[in-house]
Amino acid sequence: MKILIALGTVLSLVAHSVQADPLADAQAAARDARLADDPAWADLLQYEPYPITGHLRSLADDTGFFNAPDGARNPAAELNATLARLFEPARPQAPDEHPQCRFPARHHWLRQRLALSPAQLPEQPCPRLEKWAAEINPAGVTLVFPSAYVNSPASMFGHTLLRIDTPGQTEATRLLAYTINYAAKADATDGFTFALKGLTGLYPGALSSSPYYAKVREYSDMESRDVWEYRLNLTPAETRQLLRHAWEIGATRFDYWFFDENCSYMILRLLDVARPGLRVAKQFYWTAIPVDTVKGVVAMPDLVTEISFRPSTGTELAHRAKRLDPASLDAAVAVADGRRTPQSLGTDTQAIEQLEFADRLVSFRGHAGKLDQDDALARLKAIQITRSQLPTIDTGVVPVPPRPENGHASGRFGLAAGGLDGANALFLDLRPAYHDLRDPETGYARGAQIRFLELGASQREGQGWRLDRFLPVDIVSVAPRLSWTQPLSWKVRFGWERVLGARHATGPMIAGGPGAAWEWKGLLGYVFLENQLLGHGDLQKHWAIGSGPLAGLLWDVGAGKRLQLEAGRQWFNDRRLDRSAARAHLRTRLSPRDNLVAGYEWMHIELPDTDRQERRLTVGWQHYF
Image (cartoon, rainbow, N blue to C red):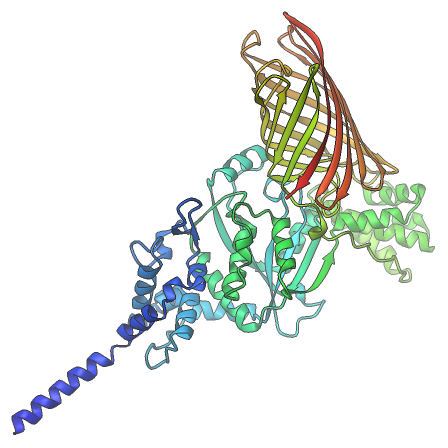
């Protein structure tokens, strides 16, 4: 009898031990609930379907991001392996190395979905994570959009980042909040190299955290970029989950792709993890242009609660300059230049505005590296001493420009009819991104053209379709020169064009050069020294290099209408080639997504066997998408 009782006790203990395996229970519960198929799990692992097959694969390019050997493509295996790792024993000697600390967002989500108690899955201490989160003190999230800055290769399309707001945050303290920023670890300073590597995924992406005031100084003071802030209605709990996921991907390599897996797309995926079911990133399957992602966030019902504008130093200077007459402005600039003393301006209201303009101009030049720091400090001290002895005045508020989300969509398709080289013709244009000088300016930087992967094709009567141009990069910066700032205008483009006219095949080319621009009563004029390197089989050496002037004018002739006039000539080292061109284009806005366009182009081409003029006349329609 005693033997039977003892045997029964042993069997009971064995059965109890089997039933009390919390890991096995959790894995079984996850399978029963089909958590591996939950979209929230896909967001946590950065899964996206392949474009053609639809099979899932993770955007993470780092094996350390996964716990299963095939975790990058197998959600169920990764979930099972992640649970196994989260149940690993404590690591008293290295607590931050525990999987719960490496994957806090997955840990939090699985604990909630499986209702795991501390008795089943003991909470492990994570000192580094806890310290970081305590310093940030999260309570809410603001999406920040610094506007486009064409003179920086990494900022040509604008940028988005997140500011993590703190409890009780005020207008005065928000600069002390921390940001979550994702960007390419770029080593290029020129647009060509950056575009080439960015288009081919050769840069790694990196997530970072820094104080908001440092970002404002970088964007607003040093790069003169206006900053837009979109307060989101994420709860403190959702904000903490966002931070947990930011911690997970912060140590993970992602290949940075200029058009899709970029700064804005990763920011949207953070929002999707913070609020399961939001799925805002799903709007951007092929491309994620920053300004388009802002439009997507604003369009989400009740997601944005408040929108604020922070003018850049350059915008504020332009506002203050307009308040001064030309003579007063010149005197204020002379003070900033050190050619005139602050006291010489006088003590009236006009003098106060001049002093404040000079103060900000010196600071602007110092931040931009255009003025030696010692000289800047000495001039600021003299200006501020004089200013401190005068009363406070109201200098007005910088006007708020149209919001970025009110601008046209970045993709554009065009269809036109007309004539080419004496024959009737049809014309097709496709531009995936993003803006040119003739587009409506609302929401975009004035004088900035950024076109990527533009295609143009034509069909002349009796012939098939032919490629006219393919331009991976076409960038123009038309920056007007003012009395207080003389920015350099510039342009660069490369690709394939019909460089010798419609009767010749396309050939490779690289073009660009410096320039200058001026603005007067809404007229924007510019001139460039355009340098070109052409390649073509009909040239003597199959290539030619040339240079010459290009002049142009932008004129808003009425509401929704813009006229562009250009003329240029280039002389080449191959003296057999001589080329001149002139063109006129009129764009009339029909609706937020549609334009009516008309154009006329004239070209004179001289080669040993060719001396002719070619004309192209078009009337057509453009649609933004």
